[in-house]
Amino acid sequence: MTTTTDRVAVVTGAGRGIGAATAHRLAADGLAVGVLDLDEPAAKSIAEQITAAGGRSLAVAVDVSDAGQVEAAVDRVAAELGPPTVLVNNAGVTRDNLLFKLTEADWDTVMGVHLRGAFLMARAVQKHMVEAGWGRIVNLSSTSALGNRGQANYSTAKAGLQGFTKTLAIELGKFGVTANAIAPGFIATEMTRATAERLGMSFDDFVAASAQQIPVGRVGQPEDIANLVSFLVSEGAGFVSGQVVYAAGGPKA
Ligand code: NAP
Image 1 (cartoon, helix red, strand yellow):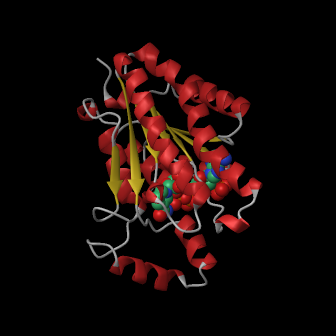
Image 2 (image 1 turned 180 degrees about the vertical axis):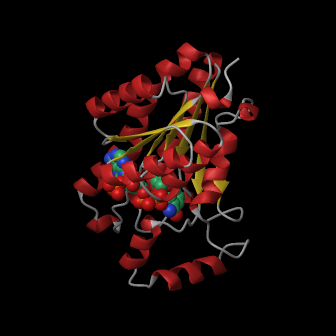
């Protein structure tokens, strides 16, 4: 029987933020982890930290919106760590603007990373999952999927990822593969730091103001999401599929 310690995970956008916390958490759970990111030094640093802590890890520089790079990255992980059967589509970007100022480039970049990226990664990794008769896919959606001012592109992509997730669950279920989405609320990372800057607020003020609107009285940390990924990719989560779990410190954004 395959145990958790034989499993290989791929986490995209794992050079920092939620992806880095997820890579660390899955490594602590005993999985080997492919740390994929656009930013190669950041990916290397996370992979080295995992290795130094006794885990198995490999850093791979990749733009998830490029089909050739995605195929090559997944092939490398399979060759050097083993066939990946856990995929966390976490890489993300924002290009926020009100609709009348949103450029086609802003639209295409966001769709490219979130939607095309998740599609290319899932297509590349699913063959290993189908061969193994087991797999776990987790896609990072967002509470912005419900609509968010200044994020017509991002909210569309994050809502699209929910439909993508449900369809993967339907198509891949018979191969022992589950697919779920996590929709985080406010998580303290470089992404929300950039939002504070765009709004002309200090990050501390932005965090404090946001926390007041969140029922649990605080903003989220990357580890809050990593903990949930850990459950969704575990053996015990095999009957949970096609779901969107909002992790926002309360029932809504
Ligand atoms: P982050 O700190 O900005 O990290 C995102 C990572 O993705 C960065 O390391 C970035 O690399 C990488 N990346 C960007 N484009 C890429 C590409 N084309 N190929 C490969 N890697 C790429 O963001 P985060 O806050 O941790 O967010 C992680 C995920 O959670 C995203 O999907 C985000 O939309 C989602 N999310 C975040 C929040 C939040 O409040 N933070 C809430 C809801 C959902 P570079 O540094 O080189 O750009």
